[in-house]
Image (cartoon, rainbow, N blue to C red; front, top):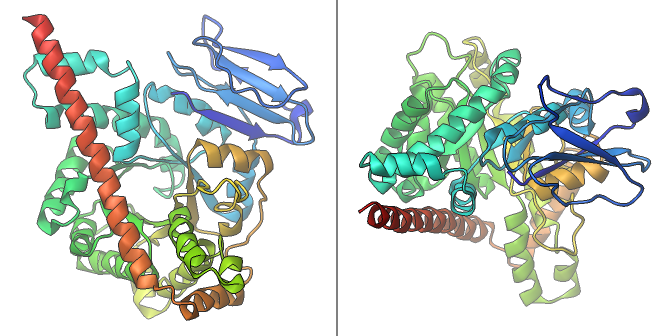
Length: 437
């Protein structure tokens, strides 16, 4: 895993860092006065300390046999402990043990998707041995894909078990998505979720289901069966409300006596909203329109949080609380900045609030730890968010169109990643079979 985790620790001089017990050295430490160095040092774990005011500790995950240093407190710990928002990592590849330094740094969960696995499996040799064994055993390519993915998910779940247990299922989960080919198939999604949950066989796995209209009933059904769900690809307030209702309906329809470990997150996508709306604003071209660029996504997110607070209160929710039910937390997804002109923490800093999750890929995670602001911001100025949302509507921005278009693009992107990976695996299998003849 070629990811990087930069850890801020303002009390560095009084904190000790060391490796896990081992008979051989697992990392090297370099003290430098230069800026952060991204270079890997062979297969070692490289730590680069930049003695700036923030005293960043940078952990570079190994490419061979993952390991990590033990870190007591970081910005991410402070982020969770003071603001109640859980930092998750939006990436997964082998060796999965490279997650250890991220967990030590305060990461509390992992999300994955077909695009992440497409990149991981197609660019790494770490899957070759298992792939060869599966092909030689006569497995078809679909089965091969799921065997590769499930092993990564199981291994990651094992690493996060302690967090999961300590938080009674609140954190420590690893998300894996059903086939994106099922985005328009209600029953197919339910069956796939049941199969995948049974296949992974870990209490801390989240089954990801897209928030497409055909899959809203699927979410209700899967929740009612006691399977925890990460609802993904949410781009609009109306669809988000339907997702919440599906979760509540599922809890109410469940015949399970203990609902305390049936949890869910609603993955509300952020940066892609600005990417599309900014283009529409530029077509309008007026000063007022241009001034609203880069503001739509966070405004809608603030309104989503307001909706979350309203829906998870009142008599209906209180009745479910008495049965041990947990809130379906909002999860901010697509948090990396797509426009390089925008601040690199634009989709993290303004969205901090209790009982939420922020899942961050490397770029966003590094930026936040290096210079992010830890403060409650999500509901700091709701009236401003409402004003921006309304101003965009007055300019002709159709929020319904935006949500539908982004959903189509998201599903299509995941389908293409999924199909591309299966094609490349088939070609690789064909080559392997020819070589073995």
